[in-house]
Image (cartoon, rainbow over the protein chains, first blue to last red):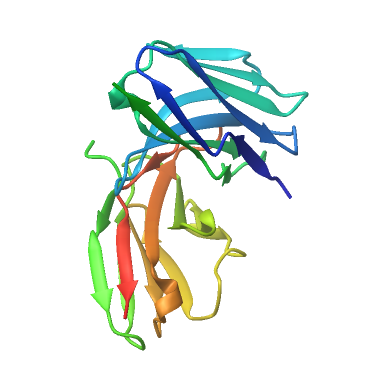
Length: 113
Length: 113
């Protein structure tokens, strides 16, 4: 059974800092890994999808890397802003043909001015 | 496309009542997922459909929960009878498998009193 772990559970940083969120998974037979953002009381917004054959994916100030063999992914946020404050979730597509996603518990990020 | 649409956004009901949650997936997506989110357990997959067919309902907690997808543009999750421990946020998501992004609705916040 796929298990996904995110570290740290919470992170508080001053504005402008570069930061790294970590995600690990137990079964490396995945199709892809997706990073989401969730604001309080809202749904999940997709940030980045990284395929199992890719090493990294970039969108603006966000960069996600994937090391499938070691079961790890990182989300790098450059020059953090207060608007980045949210919960960040990683989800692994478990390798079935039906796209079943298994989620980590998330990292709560607070960026203070 | 307007994205994944869920209704209602909020539902408050008394214990023992029937509750029906609704979801309209993104047009053209062939897979639909129902998730439940609580503080204690995070995001849990309840059931998912592929081409309107239920593929895996092993996450459905009890027989009180049932889900249907009568056509490609509509799905329901029903709880009968509801109990206070069913209180949670229920999310619907859709995607085109394999290997594409999943998109989530805004969720239904269910409170059973």
